[in-house]
Amino acid sequence: MIKGKMLNALNEQINAEQYSSLLYLSMSAWLSEKGLPGFANWMYVQYQEEMTHANKFFKYVVERGGKAQLNAIAQMPVEFDSVIDVVEKTLVHEQYITALINNLVDVAIEERDHAAQSFLKWFVDEQVEEEANVQEILDTLKLINGQGNGIFMLDRELRQRVFVDSTAATTV
Ligand code: FEO
Image (cartoon, rainbow, N blue to C red):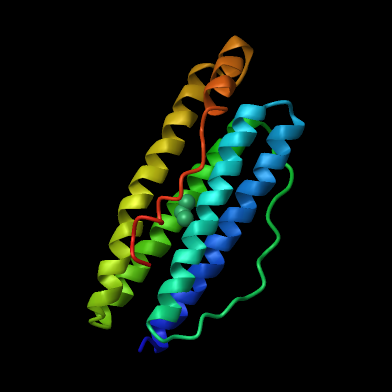
């Protein structure tokens, strides 16, 4: 049975992943309004992914006999300066989530919770991919200065992204 510090940290992560999902949904709305349907689509898929992350933590807590606790979610930003600003904020947020995941691993090691360490490995790997994907978009955006024909091409490319539940293949 999971309890104490580990349980609290996992419950905080459910909240953080839910916040992430709504942050990206809010960004998707902004991008859509600015006439960037491809970026809006990419961010909407990001929202869907974050929901699966929150659910994966929720299911794990329940499976380990813990009480999953859902708390109020902080207000996410609704206005942004530019598309570069949106993607920069996404990268900063993903780096913050990586730090939270690393902290969770530290707690699992401290508590000698081997099951949690094994469970968290998926998220450690996922964060490497998440940060790399966002960094790549940001690099391209900076290269084209966030405007012109380049942004049109990039928007078209990001329209291709489709949601795949990458948590579905795992046991929890
Ligand atoms: Fe669930 Fe993007 O970290």
